[in-house]
Length: 351
Ligand code: SAM
Ligand code: FES
Image (cartoon, protein in one colour):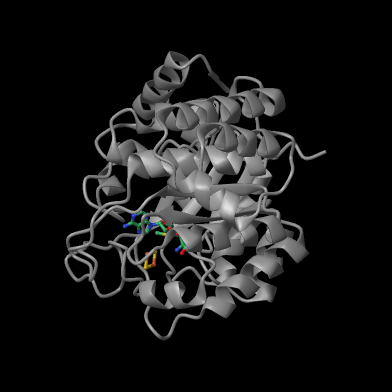
C-alpha cells in the first residue's frame, strides 16, 4: 500500500472510524518509517487530547508467586521447580500500601499467581482492610480466574478494578500458550463477569507471543472493541529460561510500540500502561511507550527481598530498588518525555 493511503488510514482512526481487517493489516505490517512516526505522533496527540500530559501511577504489590497454573510462557508457573516461592502476609501487604500512600500512590494493584492459599475469605479481609485505611484509593486486583461469586465478593469488599489479560482472542492460539486444563471460554467468561459486576476492567495480551500471527492481533483488536475495557495491558513476550518456551524469541520493541499507538487511536479514553516488560526489552522502552500513547506506569511496591522471585521472564528490571527509589526513578523518566506523574486515583475518562 502506498504511503499516502496508509496516512489516510491513520486519519480514519483519528476520526474514530473503524478500519477493515485489511487496513489494520496494512498498518501492522508497513515498513514505511514516515508512516510509523506519523502513527506514533497521532497516538500521542490523542492521548494529550484525553489525558493531557498526566501519567497515572499504580503501586504494584506482587504478593505471592505461588501458582496452580502452568501457562507455557510464565516464569512462575507451577511446573517451574527452580523458583523459590513466597507469600506476603496481610500485614506485609498493608505495610506496602502504607509506604505507597506516603509516596503519593492512590491506586494499589494486588497481583499474584493463582495461589489457593489466598481463599476468598483471606482476599476479602485484605481488600476490606485496604478499603478502610485508604478510602480515597482505588484497589485493583490481578489474581487470575475465579468464579462470579468470588469476583462479586471482592467487589463488595471494596475492590474497584480487575486486570485479567485475555492473552489472545484466538482460541487455537490460546491453546498453544496454555495446557489443556486451562479454558479459553472460561477466561472470556471471567472478563464478562467482571464487567457485569461493575469493575473497571483491564484486558490485554503479549506482543510477539509464540505462534502469534498478525491476523491474531486483529482478532485481539476486534475482541477489545466488543469488550470495551477501561484498561489494556500489553507488553512484549519475553523468554524465561525455565519454561517450555525457553527457546522462543522475545517479542519486538518496535511492534509493541506500534500496537500501543494503534490501541490508543482505537480507544482514545483507555488506560494504557507502559509496562515493565517494555522497560525490560529496552532501557528506554517505557519512555518510548509513553511517547506512543501510553499513560500509566506501574512501579513496584513489593518488598525488595521478594522482587527477584516474581520473575515472569528473564532479566526483569527494578528488582534491586526500594519502593521510593523506583518511584523517583520513574518520575524522572516520565519527566524526560515532557509528561508528569500525578497523585490521583487515575480513573478512566470515558464520556
Ligand atoms: N495470575 C494472574 C493472571 O493470570 O492474570 C496475574 C499474574 S500473570 C503473571 C500477569 C501477566 O503476566 C499475564 O497475563 C501475562 O500476559 C504476563 N506474562 C507472563 N509471562 C510473561 C512473559 N514471559 N513475558 C511477558 N509477559 C508475561
Ligand atoms: Fe500463574 Fe503465570 S502461570 S501467574
